[in-house]
Image 1 (cartoon, rainbow, N blue to C red):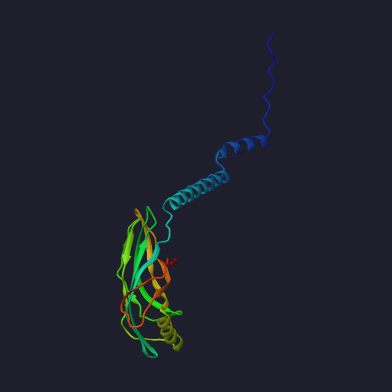
Image 2 (tube, one colour):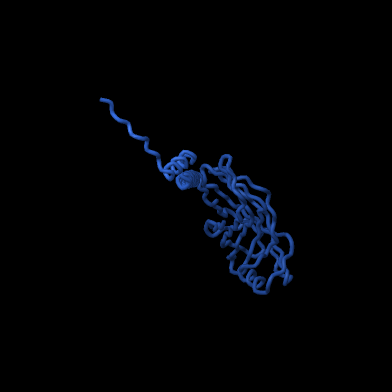
Length: 223
């Protein structure tokens, strides 16, 4: 016996419109904008962290140390305090500077030196030639300072006369300039350097030449 087929059911108009809208709407991307932003942020954080770690390792390996300066000898060739307020003096100092860095070289520019007494300059500044300080090396400098008359206070002039009478004179050798570090292909910018060497020297009125250093003063270095 044949099965009776009833009339076909018609799909409601609302459902037809919804199905058509679904077909016409493009498929959403599996990568939402928020997920892409998070991925970019994660990559950026990882990159910055990697750069920071590399910079830290380089700094630990090539970390530069300050150079060391020591005065090893002094000489007084001329000292005239008889024409105040002007003072004429000629001195020479031998300074040994050591670069303690095993991987870093030091280059000095615009280096000058002068002598002071009671915080007042008694010689005009003298420019020194550029200096290349190779890694883990030692260099000796022997600048001659003075030669020109310098105006000084009465306190300085009287103090030098008294020290010359007592036989002991307190002096300060000052070096000023700029330096930069070099490690392989890496070069730093310029840094200011200030070196002060306080010392006591034995003097004798009328004596000219090498004078004894009372101790071996190591200088203070500020960069």
